[in-house]
Image 1 (tube, rainbow, N blue to C red):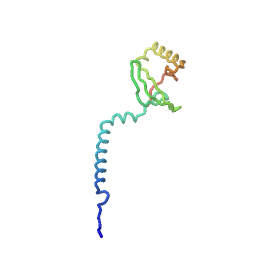
Image 2: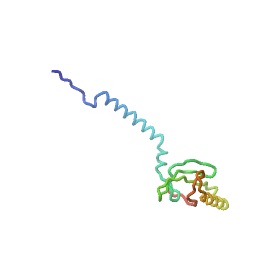
Image 3: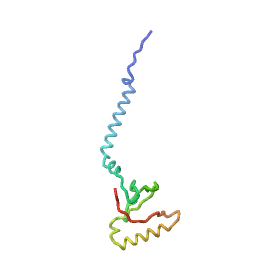
Image 4: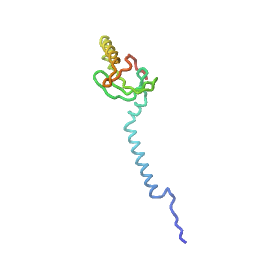
Length: 125
């Protein structure tokens, strides 16, 4: 009769490999958190424009920024264009942009972006 005494599972080679993997993974995760903590904190603060929650910035141009946003009331995902405040200082420019938005909202064509709403709103959040 032969008796084999095996080490406990936590002292086996595969357990040591698991320990090494956890150690490397936690080190990499900590490093990633240190490098990205500002981005994480900025994304945690929800920003709203009127009844739209801004999710992420999609683009930026001379007239303003375009955001991926969620309509808080309908839960619909939309593209939201926020114009530069410098453009809106001039009342003539503001009126022209409002008329342009209203004209675009009357178009219904598969190759033209559908405009659902044109309005002025302050930011909150």
